[in-house]
Length: 113
Image 1 (cartoon, one colour):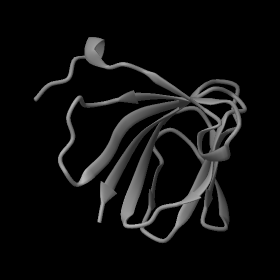
Image 2 (cartoon, one colour):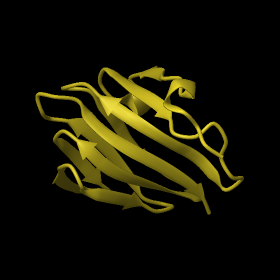
Image 3 (spheres, helix red, strand yellow):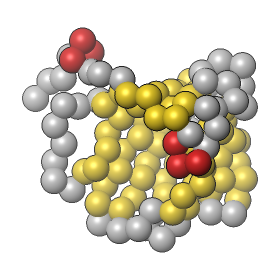
C-alpha cells in the first residue's frame, strides 16, 4: 500500500506529553498493522518539546532527520543530530526538545509488545 504525500494530514498537538509549544504529527501511512500504534513524522519548532513520559507494553523508536535536539533517555541526557536514532523499550521513558535554530524533524514508530 502506498500513501501519497498529498494524502497525509498534519495534526497539531499542543504541549505534547506536557512539553513546550506544539508538535506537528504527520502520519506516514494511512493504515498500520495491528501491532503498530504510530508511524509518523514529528516536527518540533525551535524551543518546542515532547515532555517526559514512560512507555508501557510498547516500544517507541525515533530516527532524527533534521535539526538538533536534546533527549532524556530515562535519566540520561543526550544530544541528537541528523542520522541518530533512539529506542525506548517498555518500562522506560524519554523526552525530546528542539535546542536548535531550525525545526527538529524525526520519524517515530510505536510498536505494541
